[in-house]
Image 1 (cartoon, rainbow, N blue to C red):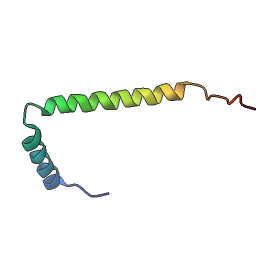
Image 2: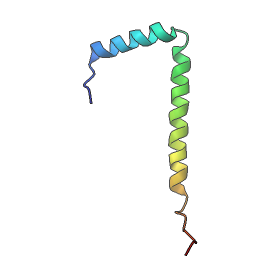
Image 3: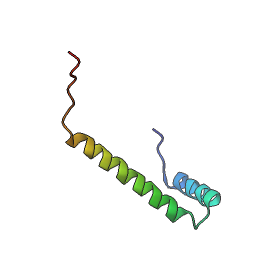
Image 4: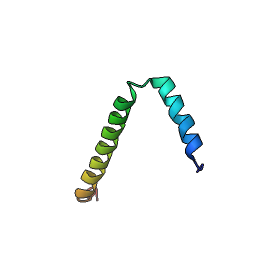
Length: 57
């Protein structure tokens, strides 16, 4: 995995601002946060369910 330092992160941030604009960044962050939250909740829901048994035998 690449080791990202401060200069690399600044370059990535500048590229994101140039592509999406300053006004879209909060919306992107909100969407990303909601996606991560939904993913975590679905993982928790899957762990709460008991394992299914196969009745094919």
